[in-house]
Length: 338
Ligand SMILES: *[C@@H]1O[C@H](CO)[C@@H](O)[C@H](O)[C@H]1NC(C)=O
Ligand SMILES: *[C@@H]1O[C@H](CO)[C@@H](O)[C@H](O)[C@H]1NC(C)=O
Image 1 (cartoon, rainbow, N blue to C red):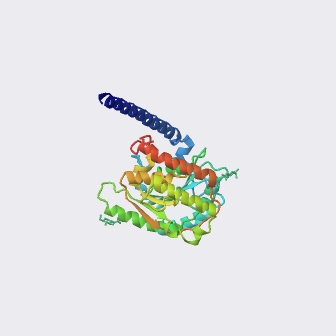
Image 2 (tube, rainbow, N blue to C red):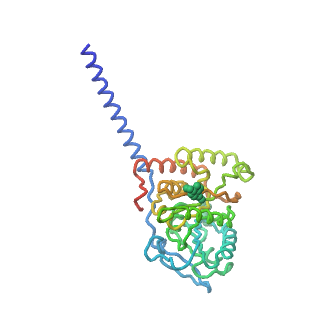
Image 3 (cartoon, protein in one colour):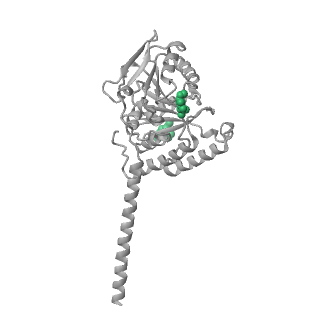
C-alpha cells in the first residue's frame, strides 16, 4: 500500500517535471520566434529628417523636420490640420486626390493646413512630380505642401509614422493617395474628435476618429471585388478579430484622424512598418485608454493598389500574430519610445 502511494508520487513528480520542461521549452521557442519576427523601425537617413517644399517662384526649400513632441514645436504657426499622405509610385493617382484635398482644405481652413507627402522610396519620381504640381497646378505657398523623401522603402506604416511625428497642425489625418475616401468627410472625423475632447476629463484629452467602411460591406463597392480579394478580406477580418481588436469593425480604412496628444502617445511606440500597422496603432490607443470613434465615410474602390495580394496577405497575417504575441511576451512595450 505504502509502496504504491510512493510509486504514484514519484510518477507525479516526474510527470510534473516533464510538463514543466515542455512548457519552458515551448515558451522559450515561442519567445525566440516572435523576437526574430518582430520589427523595429529602421533609423532614418539624414535626408529623411528633412522636408522639401516649393515657394511661389518654384524654388525648392529644404528644412529640418521638427518632432511634434519637441519644445520648439510650431504651435504658434496656427496650422489646424496636417494631412499625411504615404506615397509609393503614386504619379499616376495622386493628382486627383491632391486636387480634391486642396480644394476642400483651402475653402474650409484657408491657410491653416498643410499636406505632407511621405515618398516611401518611390522609383517613379513621386517627389519631383508632387513638388512640380504644388507650384504649377496648385500655386501653393511655401510649406503648404511638403515632401519627406525616403532614400529606401520602409512600408506604409513607416511612412505614416515619420509623417505623423513631424506634423505642424493641431490635428493629423493620414489619407491614402488613391483618393478612395471622399476627402470632405474629414469634417465628420474632426467633429467627432472634438466631441471626444470635450467629453474627456484627462489632462491631455487624446482622441482618435477613424473612417469606417463597415456600412458598405454588402454594397456594390465590395461585392464587385474579385472572389479571391473578398476571400482574403474576410480571412483578414477574422484574424484581426481573433488576434487584434474586437471593438472596431473596420481597422484598415486609410483615413484616420488624431489630435496631437494622441499622436504623441501612439506614434513614437509604433513598431510595424508594413501594411498591418493600422492594427498596432489602434491596439496602442486601446492600451492607453485613448477613446476611438468609428465614423462611416463615403468610399469607392480605386484601381492600382500597391498590394501584392498573395505575398502581402501572408505578411499581414504573420505580422498581426507577431504584434499580439510581442505585446503579450513583453517584446513590444507601449511605454518605450523607439
Ligand atoms: C515603381 O516604379 C518603378 C519605375 O516606374 C518600377 O520599375 C517599379 O516596378 C515600380 N514598383 C512597383 C511596386 O510598382
Ligand atoms: C460622453 O460621455 C458620456 C458619459 O460618459 C457618454 O454617455 C457619451 O456617449 C460620451 N460622448 C461621446 C461623444 O463619446
